[in-house]
Image 1 (cartoon, rainbow over the protein chains, first blue to last red):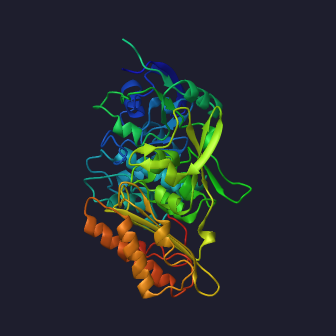
Image 2: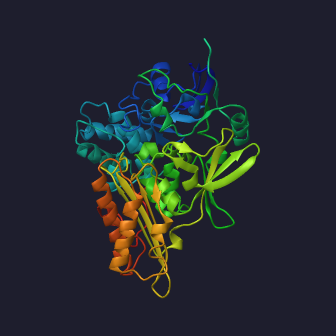
Image 3: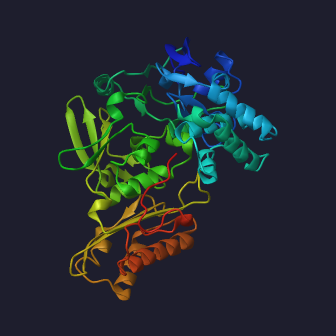
Length: 163
Length: 305
């Protein structure tokens, strides 16, 4: 038996949105199919790979594990919103300049993980950076250039990360 | 086509009211239920009963110390919240800080980890060891039972249809012991399901005899293992190599690992032996573990972002 439709409202990248849908649909599907946030990548579908990472109320989460009903009334930021922010654009630029990207599939999740890490710890050690991206799997890079790029973003952002 | 209901209560009172009238599955973090009920890509997960989503109930998100000095953790507290909270007991913070990875720890809840009743769950080990209780609430009141009684057996919990876990109460902390030990054996640092996790704690009397000793093992049987009979072998006595071997032998008879049993047994034996041997030398500091060099004696902070 399928679940009934309900009206779900939340804030998406700073704008209030609403949708009538089955509240058990995965947030990842709603973000991609109904709101066109195609930067939210689906990798493992079970919360292990981090490709679909988003921020929910400022905390990094994987929307493949979250029913859209649990997003009701909450604040959601995807890569589409993060990259437009000052902090987000610093990370995106650092990833480009640092050669962090190969196939690119894991990168939206990596940027969100880096954003979450640097917002909480503006000056992380290499070990702390590796812990910060430990839930994001990359099969191309071997992680080293991603780690270097996050160091670059920390340096370039400087005081901005403390705001 | 007949459709199923879904409930998204705004308050705990509303949630308990719904629970009293309907047979529902309570979904908080979703990290177990959304995976076990998932279908193919693009299709909504399908549950065999109506779902009640309680992820954002503010009443379930607090951590405080009650008048008896016990740590009370709201059922909806996430692993990240617990790992970050200095109010929470050390063993529990360690377990929470090594569960899944960053994003998962921001979703997975303590009540979910208990109710899932998996022998590989990360929090039951510390909770068994510290005599933690769950508070089960319904419209007609509440009751408290030990987590070790609440988890009846594999995937089975002692919960009435009208009840919900609302709080986890932990009476003891590392302050009640002289030395503590927590070690997770996993294949990776992140996203690792426990191969074995051992939680231990010991307190000595002034005369050097053992006042209290506890040991609990995760992933070594159908249920988290703890045995008061084994622990009592050394209570009231001075540690000796023979007594330590008696504890190891006793605990070996308690556990019943299914996959890779010899590896799990030997690792458990070694971890008990290491902890008791080191504790017996009464070193400076409190934490006895050398996990990847992260935790050294005397530095009990878990790694959090």
